[in-house]
Image (cartoon, rainbow, N blue to C red; front, side):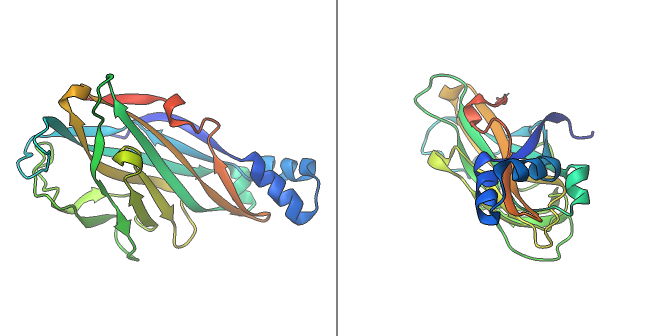
Length: 238
Protein backbone atom coordinates (compact mmCIF):
# COMPACT_ATOMS: atom_id res chain seq x y z
CA UNK A 1 0.00 0.00 0.00
CA UNK A 2 1.51 3.37 -0.99
CA UNK A 3 2.24 5.96 1.65
CA UNK A 4 -0.59 8.39 2.33
CA UNK A 5 0.37 12.05 2.15
CA UNK A 6 -0.86 13.84 5.26
CA UNK A 7 -0.13 17.37 4.06
CA UNK A 8 2.52 19.46 2.29
CA UNK A 9 4.53 22.40 3.56
CA UNK A 10 6.19 25.06 1.44
CA UNK A 11 9.64 25.75 2.87
CA UNK A 12 10.43 29.44 2.63
CA UNK A 13 13.40 31.57 3.68
CA UNK A 14 13.19 33.28 7.03
CA UNK A 15 13.11 37.08 7.21
CA UNK A 16 16.40 37.05 9.10
CA UNK A 17 18.07 35.12 6.27
CA UNK A 18 17.11 37.78 3.72
CA UNK A 19 18.39 40.57 5.96
CA UNK A 20 21.70 38.80 6.57
CA UNK A 21 22.27 38.28 2.84
CA UNK A 22 21.48 41.90 2.08
CA UNK A 23 23.92 43.04 4.76
CA UNK A 24 26.69 40.69 3.57
CA UNK A 25 26.32 41.61 -0.11
CA UNK A 26 25.50 45.32 0.38
CA UNK A 27 22.42 44.83 -1.78
CA UNK A 28 19.00 46.20 -0.97
CA UNK A 29 16.60 43.98 0.92
CA UNK A 30 14.10 44.37 -1.91
CA UNK A 31 16.63 43.16 -4.48
CA UNK A 32 17.64 40.16 -2.39
CA UNK A 33 14.02 39.36 -1.55
CA UNK A 34 13.09 39.22 -5.24
CA UNK A 35 15.89 36.76 -6.02
CA UNK A 36 15.16 34.68 -2.95
CA UNK A 37 11.46 34.49 -3.79
CA UNK A 38 12.29 33.20 -7.25
CA UNK A 39 15.05 30.71 -6.46
CA UNK A 40 15.12 29.76 -2.79
CA UNK A 41 12.09 27.61 -2.16
CA UNK A 42 11.63 24.03 -1.11
CA UNK A 43 8.76 21.75 -0.25
CA UNK A 44 8.22 18.79 2.04
CA UNK A 45 5.46 16.23 1.70
CA UNK A 46 4.71 14.73 5.09
CA UNK A 47 3.36 11.20 5.20
CA UNK A 48 0.54 10.28 7.53
CA UNK A 49 2.38 8.56 10.42
CA UNK A 50 2.11 4.77 10.60
CA UNK A 51 2.11 2.90 13.89
CA UNK A 52 1.61 -0.56 15.34
CA UNK A 53 1.09 -1.61 18.94
CA UNK A 54 3.89 -3.68 20.47
CA UNK A 55 2.48 -6.72 22.27
CA UNK A 56 5.60 -8.39 23.65
CA UNK A 57 6.80 -5.86 26.22
CA UNK A 58 8.29 -8.23 28.81
CA UNK A 59 11.80 -6.85 28.38
CA UNK A 60 10.86 -3.17 28.39
CA UNK A 61 11.53 -1.01 31.42
CA UNK A 62 8.33 0.63 32.72
CA UNK A 63 9.06 1.30 36.43
CA UNK A 64 5.88 -0.70 37.16
CA UNK A 65 3.74 1.94 35.44
CA UNK A 66 1.05 0.61 33.15
CA UNK A 67 1.78 1.71 29.58
CA UNK A 68 1.28 0.77 25.96
CA UNK A 69 4.10 0.76 23.42
CA UNK A 70 3.91 1.59 19.73
CA UNK A 71 6.34 1.44 16.88
CA UNK A 72 5.90 4.68 14.91
CA UNK A 73 7.18 5.53 11.44
CA UNK A 74 7.45 9.07 10.08
CA UNK A 75 8.02 9.93 6.43
CA UNK A 76 9.29 13.20 4.95
CA UNK A 77 9.69 13.77 1.21
CA UNK A 78 11.90 16.74 0.32
CA UNK A 79 11.64 18.63 -2.96
CA UNK A 80 13.02 21.77 -4.58
CA UNK A 81 10.92 23.98 -6.82
CA UNK A 82 11.79 23.93 -10.55
CA UNK A 83 13.21 27.46 -10.24
CA UNK A 84 15.45 26.40 -7.35
CA UNK A 85 16.65 23.37 -9.31
CA UNK A 86 17.38 25.55 -12.34
CA UNK A 87 19.43 27.83 -10.09
CA UNK A 88 21.38 24.76 -8.89
CA UNK A 89 20.19 25.11 -5.31
CA UNK A 90 20.85 22.10 -3.06
CA UNK A 91 19.58 20.91 0.31
CA UNK A 92 22.58 20.71 2.63
CA UNK A 93 20.82 20.16 5.95
CA UNK A 94 17.39 19.26 7.30
CA UNK A 95 15.71 18.78 10.65
CA UNK A 96 12.70 16.50 11.04
CA UNK A 97 11.03 17.22 14.37
CA UNK A 98 8.05 15.88 16.29
CA UNK A 99 6.16 16.62 19.47
CA UNK A 100 4.25 14.23 21.74
CA UNK A 101 1.61 15.09 24.31
CA UNK A 102 -1.05 13.26 26.27
CA UNK A 103 -4.49 12.91 24.70
CA UNK A 104 -5.98 13.88 28.07
CA UNK A 105 -5.05 16.17 30.97
CA UNK A 106 -3.06 13.37 32.56
CA UNK A 107 -0.16 14.26 34.85
CA UNK A 108 1.85 11.64 32.97
CA UNK A 109 3.02 12.18 29.41
CA UNK A 110 4.01 9.93 26.50
CA UNK A 111 7.72 9.61 25.83
CA UNK A 112 10.18 8.32 23.29
CA UNK A 113 11.53 5.03 24.61
CA UNK A 114 13.93 4.56 21.72
CA UNK A 115 14.48 6.12 18.30
CA UNK A 116 16.23 5.02 15.15
CA UNK A 117 18.35 5.92 13.51
CA UNK A 118 19.86 7.67 16.52
CA UNK A 119 23.40 7.89 15.17
CA UNK A 120 24.18 6.96 11.57
CA UNK A 121 27.54 7.88 10.12
CA UNK A 122 28.44 5.10 7.67
CA UNK A 123 28.81 5.73 3.97
CA UNK A 124 27.76 3.80 0.88
CA UNK A 125 25.04 1.69 2.47
CA UNK A 126 22.09 0.22 0.55
CA UNK A 127 18.53 1.49 1.15
CA UNK A 128 18.15 -0.83 4.18
CA UNK A 129 20.22 -1.03 7.33
CA UNK A 130 20.56 -2.74 10.69
CA UNK A 131 20.04 -0.79 13.89
CA UNK A 132 20.74 -2.01 17.41
CA UNK A 133 17.88 -0.91 19.64
CA UNK A 134 18.55 -2.67 22.91
CA UNK A 135 15.48 -4.64 24.02
CA UNK A 136 14.61 -7.86 22.22
CA UNK A 137 10.91 -7.58 21.54
CA UNK A 138 8.71 -8.84 18.75
CA UNK A 139 6.17 -6.92 16.72
CA UNK A 140 3.12 -8.90 15.68
CA UNK A 141 2.70 -7.00 12.44
CA UNK A 142 6.08 -7.78 10.93
CA UNK A 143 7.42 -10.48 13.23
CA UNK A 144 10.70 -8.63 13.55
CA UNK A 145 12.81 -8.07 16.60
CA UNK A 146 13.29 -4.45 17.57
CA UNK A 147 16.48 -5.50 19.30
CA UNK A 148 18.12 -6.14 15.95
CA UNK A 149 16.28 -5.33 12.75
CA UNK A 150 18.22 -6.43 9.70
CA UNK A 151 17.07 -5.38 6.26
CA UNK A 152 13.51 -4.70 7.39
CA UNK A 153 13.71 -0.94 7.80
CA UNK A 154 13.89 1.06 4.60
CA UNK A 155 15.13 4.61 5.00
CA UNK A 156 14.72 5.62 1.38
CA UNK A 157 18.00 6.93 0.01
CA UNK A 158 20.13 6.02 2.99
CA UNK A 159 22.85 8.53 2.25
CA UNK A 160 22.59 11.33 4.83
CA UNK A 161 24.41 11.34 8.09
CA UNK A 162 21.58 11.15 10.61
CA UNK A 163 21.67 12.04 14.29
CA UNK A 164 18.61 11.66 16.51
CA UNK A 165 17.74 13.37 19.78
CA UNK A 166 14.82 12.48 22.11
CA UNK A 167 14.35 16.15 23.02
CA UNK A 168 12.95 17.87 26.10
CA UNK A 169 11.39 15.39 28.56
CA UNK A 170 11.87 12.77 25.81
CA UNK A 171 8.75 14.17 24.11
CA UNK A 172 10.31 16.23 21.31
CA UNK A 173 12.27 13.84 19.10
CA UNK A 174 14.18 15.29 16.20
CA UNK A 175 16.59 14.02 13.58
CA UNK A 176 19.29 16.10 11.91
CA UNK A 177 20.16 15.03 8.36
CA UNK A 178 23.32 16.10 6.57
CA UNK A 179 23.54 14.61 3.06
CA UNK A 180 27.07 13.67 2.10
CA UNK A 181 26.61 14.65 -1.54
CA UNK A 182 24.21 17.54 -0.78
CA UNK A 183 21.30 15.88 -2.55
CA UNK A 184 18.67 15.63 0.16
CA UNK A 185 15.85 14.91 -2.25
CA UNK A 186 13.28 12.15 -1.91
CA UNK A 187 11.66 10.22 0.91
CA UNK A 188 13.24 9.81 4.35
CA UNK A 189 11.79 7.40 6.91
CA UNK A 190 12.39 7.83 10.64
CA UNK A 191 11.21 5.55 13.43
CA UNK A 192 10.74 5.59 17.19
CA UNK A 193 9.37 3.41 19.94
CA UNK A 194 6.65 5.27 21.84
CA UNK A 195 5.67 4.66 25.46
CA UNK A 196 2.15 5.84 26.38
CA UNK A 197 1.02 5.57 30.03
CA UNK A 198 -2.54 4.26 30.33
CA UNK A 199 -3.61 7.47 32.06
CA UNK A 200 -2.87 9.40 28.84
CA UNK A 201 -5.51 7.45 26.89
CA UNK A 202 -3.38 7.92 23.80
CA UNK A 203 -0.75 10.30 22.47
CA UNK A 204 -1.04 13.30 20.18
CA UNK A 205 1.73 13.53 17.58
CA UNK A 206 2.63 16.60 15.50
CA UNK A 207 5.60 16.96 13.15
CA UNK A 208 7.58 19.59 11.23
CA UNK A 209 10.53 19.78 8.84
CA UNK A 210 12.87 22.61 7.93
CA UNK A 211 16.40 22.92 6.63
CA UNK A 212 19.12 24.83 4.82
CA UNK A 213 19.60 25.31 1.08
CA UNK A 214 22.93 26.18 -0.53
CA UNK A 215 22.40 28.78 -3.27
CA UNK A 216 24.34 31.36 -5.24
CA UNK A 217 23.52 33.74 -2.41
CA UNK A 218 24.97 31.42 0.21
CA UNK A 219 23.48 29.01 2.70
CA UNK A 220 19.90 29.98 3.52
CA UNK A 221 17.59 28.61 6.20
CA UNK A 222 14.10 27.66 5.03
CA UNK A 223 11.09 26.44 6.93
CA UNK A 224 7.28 26.23 7.06
CA UNK A 225 5.10 29.24 7.71
CA UNK A 226 3.79 27.70 10.94
CA UNK A 227 6.70 26.47 13.05
CA UNK A 228 4.95 26.12 16.42
CA UNK A 229 4.22 22.42 16.81
CA UNK A 230 1.26 23.01 19.14
CA UNK A 231 -0.48 24.81 16.27
CA UNK A 232 0.24 22.21 13.60
CA UNK A 233 -1.96 19.23 12.59
CA UNK A 234 -1.74 16.23 14.89
CA UNK A 235 -2.80 12.58 14.92
CA UNK A 236 -4.02 10.49 17.84
CA UNK A 237 -2.09 7.29 18.52
CA UNK A 238 -3.88 4.70 20.64
